[in-house]
Image (cartoon, rainbow, N blue to C red; front, side, top):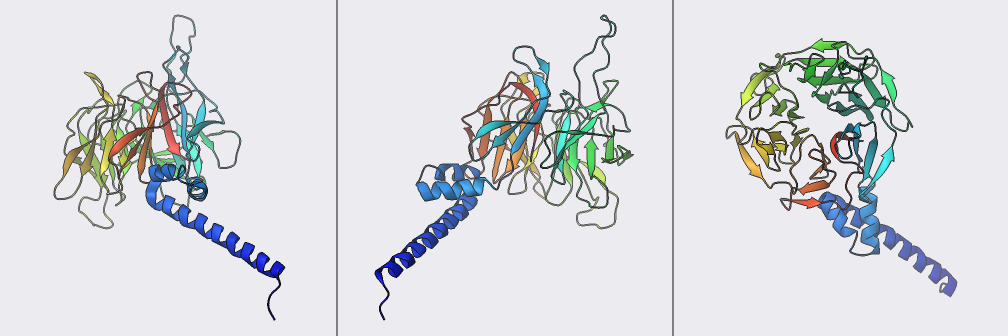
Length: 367
């Protein structure tokens, strides 16, 4: 018995719907394979590619920037937080920090944004006496919450210009963070490395770096060792914290010096690891001024720094994250509110269409 025309039409529509969904999935996969910049380009190809690209972009975390020092207009230290929607490339307002702060550290621990230390607005008590602006305060924004919550203060005291890296573990109540270097409440640079328990604020000393270092770049490498470079007190130097012998097990982690950068720099924000495993450092400033230069360190037997394409703008103290085969930077000094993305495949920087709502220093993470 031949199928009725109405049945045929229903089956045809069903086939068409399945076909559309299959195409959408295909384009989503194409977008994922193309990386962040490639996915943005697919938004302008056709309706289905646009839907597929948006589906992929919707799975990516946001770049969030919080606090900092607003250099334009003299507003000073701020508590604002903004998130960059990678599908629309627009900045969206997010819950503000409980306390305005700059030169702080932030990282994501178990899906929650943690902000530690920093400089707070100056207080005059009395008018002729400036109170120390550093803080040991810690606050956290958990996923799905509409406001930050205050955590116990750091037992090591106030600190700023420090790098914070999340620790991959599951036995603590709220998670742990590794704090590297920085400056203390006496404004003195430190070589300390501390493991912070977020539930208690207790800071446990680790292997100190041989030299004091603050406002520097650092990142965790694929082998779990940590590389750091630059800083207000070390400029072009670099070092790595890891096992004393490659592949050695059950041994104490130690510091070793790495090859120096071609340019001395501090305020070069969080370092990033490229997809090929190289440790990359961007921008910053030195005694000659601000720079847009970038370079990457190749580790192993042929250890050396190689130049990367410079950013469109010179900047220091900015937000910097790695996502989907690209590096995104935003804000920074001097009076910089623009955002750029470095496409590793193309090997060049591209300007994003929308800059931060305010200019100046900030810090950021992927959330």
